[in-house]
Length: 166
Image (cartoon, rainbow, N blue to C red; front, side, top):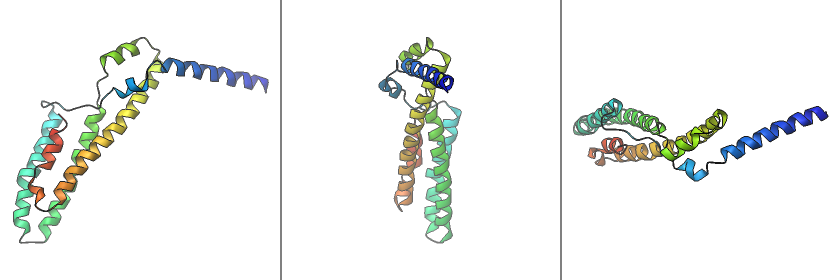
């Protein structure tokens, strides 16, 4: 038993040393890493923007116009809006996950050990993931809410949600 205790103590000492080394970065420095943004020249941005514009400027007005005659068209429009919402929310989340490390943080990481760097990157990734999901749900949820209100669906909410990523 004493040997096991010695091994446990050695492992605990190593963990404490790693945490102290990882402690060189403060939570504020880790929080300074911001979620990614889109560029107007990205192919994925242009495709999503085209889908949003197509939905906002062609499909919604067409189904609103024809929807007065039939009951099925508003249902089809709602299904299309849910599909577009899912597509745009997933894209916003994916795009937000792609971040660039701030220069001051990258310099600090250069001199550290590989294990510590992976720990710090995992922390940063976790923070970015929570910011990204919040960003995607707020922007996509707001657009879906606007699209759900009759009459306001003529407002180009999906296009605004996509353009807010610039």
